Length: 366
Ligand code: HEC
Image 1 (tube, rainbow, N blue to C red):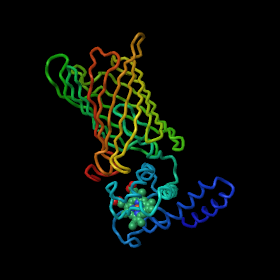
Image 2 (cartoon, rainbow, N blue to C red):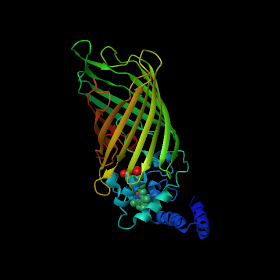
Image 3 (cartoon, protein in one colour):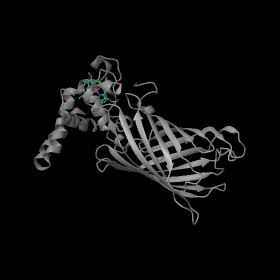
């Protein structure tokens, strides 16, 4: 492996006489600096040196493991290298290099670390931008989300919807949703407890290009009529929801996400619907490396596919915040305001608690 890099360095050095100098120079620097500053622990091959060689028990990350490495965005790794492990609740055995290396040197080293994963099918963690309250993300995820919706209308509904999402391979993801809650029944004045409509979904990242900063996925959900229709918990219809989801990274940690979807009733008497969702947001960190806050504004548009029906528009301002040091437990709170078709529709308080469990246990990293 090491000799390969030397050959590569020589080749790059020759080519830099002909090609753009700065880019290749960064590459060589990165590999050399990695060798000097990181290889003693992380190994020249990026897999982490053996316990005998490094002299401590703590497990080291394997940078050749694309499933792990691809999902970590450069800015997070930059924070850990600059500030040391504790900045993201990792061990202090991972030293801080902020005084020894410039930002350019750290990014050059990261450029080298990125060469250890050789399968670029895996979409990069940079696309894992904050999750909006309604719009489906383009990024396939390993996470558990607890959605909570509080209605201010007569139903006074409190619906909790746990969602379990698990990645399959570099681009795929499966999803299960099981809503339940409490609401005032429309037929009598009783408050009922019950389950809603169960959802099963699949998503596939069709396209992603970090240089262009955009990614595109397609997916679909099957919604089963498990919820009691007469108590208002379910629609009474089996539905198919095909969708496409898009993300564009923007300068200054801003991002645009969009989703278009259809809602097709395959049984029952619900009307078919088409919907579009767009969200614009930006992430701010406390200090350079601290807690991330992401304000977002989401616009939801939907229309029943019946002639003469109007477009229903909602606006959902919201704020996502990282609750712990590892930043893998997140809270998002917003309000869904009806903009058109307001008759019989009231504002809804919407939130989620999200646990990105690939990054650690629920109680890790606080
Ligand atoms: C003294 C040994 C040591 C040196 C030197 C070292 N590291 Fe680390 N590094 C570690 C350990 C140990 C961990 C894992 C900490 C944990 O899991 O709590 C780690 C974790 C990391 C992580 C976090 C991975 C994740 O889980 O997201 C990155 C990135 C990293 N190191 C990069 C580097 C780079 C780049 C250098 C050189 C500039 C370097 N390290 C030098 C020991 C070291």
